[in-house]
Image 1: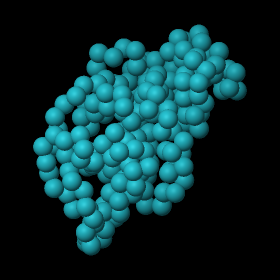
Image 2: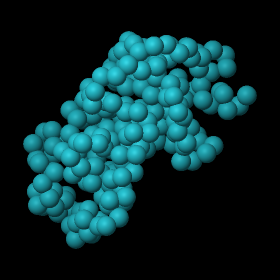
Image 3: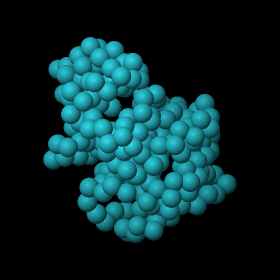
Image 4: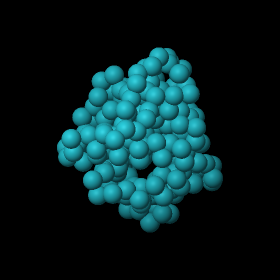
Length: 215
């Protein structure tokens, strides 16, 4: 698990009831599988259950989780909206290039390239934070290099990076990969005891939110 820092935090002991998820607040405990955010965050599509994966391209644990993420995403029902967000911690300039790469792919509608990016960085040891290396890699992938470079270097990219930093702060993230359900519940493979366990937990949280919306 890639950690920014170790912080004590309020967390939840999760259980299912007939009405969905029943949560009890506790003090900091790494063994507790889910954290309730002190300040719930708004979802982008009201009426849908939102799940966000926060990750970093340079994180080996995010790379290892990617196949499970893709498999799990294919099982999602229509009332669930899933999206990825690249974290960007203050003072971590080594992450800027990766965050900029993600924002460019997202703008171009090319997040299908996620696995290729992870494979290049972790399998091929390609330094995609170096601009010339990145642009050459993009061209080899059949992506329009001129368009990619224009977006990557655009003035508007500053606001994209500022948004990444704002989201990282707003969700109180100190490690990745991490998943947030409906702007309320935060969990991770580290907290849940593994990737498979985490996705089972996320599915339970989704079911709890669905049941709660029907009451």
